[in-house]
Length: 103
Image (cartoon, rainbow, N blue to C red; front, side):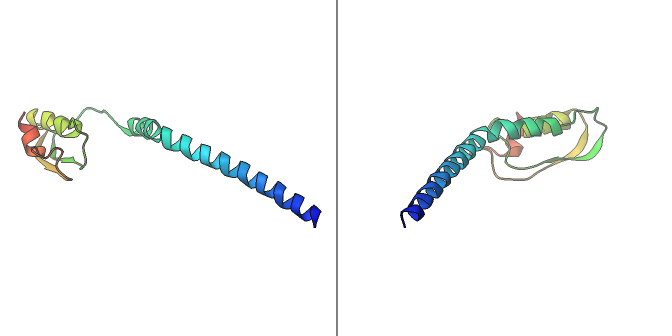
């Protein structure tokens, strides 16, 4: 019986150690996820010379500074597309994509 208690105590210590490592790893990944995802996203961005197109598509949930909408407006003013199609929620309560494109 005493031998069994020693084995159970050793198993609990090993489990606690593994659980602690998993917790630390999870916290580290959570803390680093934004820089990792930002780096991955920047690697996917292609900046080739743009030809004229039929439409520009602005996918929703732009950041607060409206980088996507601003770039789409710039390309629209340069005559790169005839139409801008935007999706997603409003960026700010008092300004939507159309209002931001006017500025």
